[in-house]
Amino acid sequence: MNRTTLAALLSGALFGLGLAMSGMTDPRVVLGFLDIFGDFDPRLAFVLAGAVLTTVLLFRPVLRRGSSLFGDRLQLSDLTRVDRRLLGGAALFGIGWGAAGYCPGPALAGLGMLSVEALWFVPAMMAGMLLHRLVDRA
Image 1 (cartoon, rainbow, N blue to C red):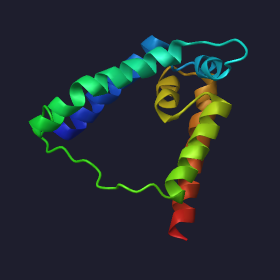
Image 2 (image 1 turned 90 degrees about the vertical axis):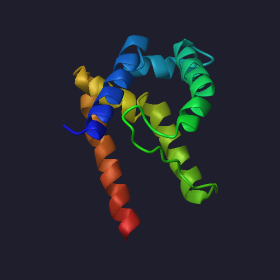
Image 3 (image 1 turned 120 degrees about the vertical axis):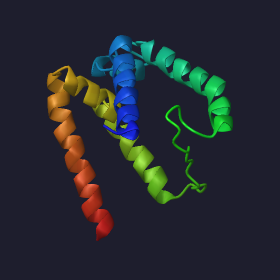
Image 4 (image 1 turned 90 degrees about the horizontal axis):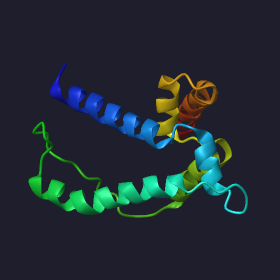
């Protein structure tokens, strides 16, 4: 196994563990966060705050380092404009997330936990990704 694959495996495992420990693999937690006038569940706000705090504290030092812990060069996107495709994709993502309570990361972690919802959601998500590729090529 090469070091890039090892880094991806370790990062994915850490991400999935964090999602599972915080309860984010349960779509009811996400839907509860979005239900501000009903049975509101604030746990997602704490997870988001933790992610923002981690980014604020570590983003600059990591960029100054210039490479990953395994020595790979860091690459940032050079895309800077907001266009219709970005806004449309973000809107579709948000609508899907709000309707299902899942986004790709928690869905894959839920799949690993044999969640019934994830067993339905992940194939539908993959079909949507395939449909995007087909439409994008046309």
